[in-house]
Length: 336
Image (cartoon, rainbow, N blue to C red; front, top):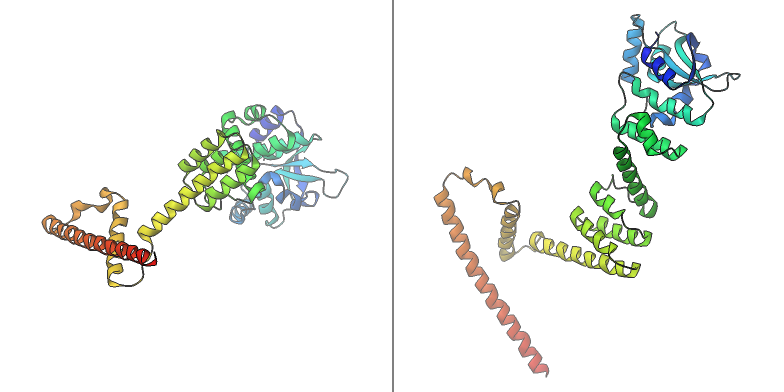
């Protein structure tokens, strides 16, 4: 069945094409069509192809596929520009030996690739915007076409393409310099974008190692990057990075002191309960849902008792600490 949308697209692009009511399966390189990089490694959806096949068996017509020329003198003369699912389905229909198709002849490599990448956006399932952006970036890198031109051709915002390019560059740099897969590491986009603003690769590697190893929050990473950018040498930048590393280590030790496990003993078990209380408080008073307490008066009595007991424990620990300091001083005097 002829497709007005496809014909308009081909005419607008000034492609040389012919509608053919039957192209044999044997003339089409089906393997190459499925492996076409313009599909962005998307596999054939078997359920979709099966649904198409059932509809074809019921004599429902489908739009003609689009083929692009290979070597017209060879056995496999065509590759599919769009319509892999339709062809996969047709092969399953008993008695079918081919499909109607728009046969396009084009020699220019860039125009061939645009045809592959843009035609899929005309199909019913369509291609999401983020995937169109990926298609455009492939054309940008492979054929050195400006983002401004591509934005116009694909009806996308240039700013959107620029941001996507910056994101790709930031991720590629992480892989190239340290094999940091930010997606697998679940590193926030804001964080690895900030790191990519570091000009020196040496400094970038050191800063990224600290950021990833110590799981620095994006705000801390941005602060570190700003401080690095004010330095005048890699040595000065290294000092900044070490300061942030030391701060991260100190914070981890504080967290460990507050939440780490204690040896089993009566006093330490009691302190462990205190740590659990602090964990609840860290989430904020709102997260305690105090309005749900059945007996507020009893709750206040318990808290007051806990507070009094805590003061008593604190005083005893201070006494023990003073005794330990006194004993240490006596040992020093004896040695003297």
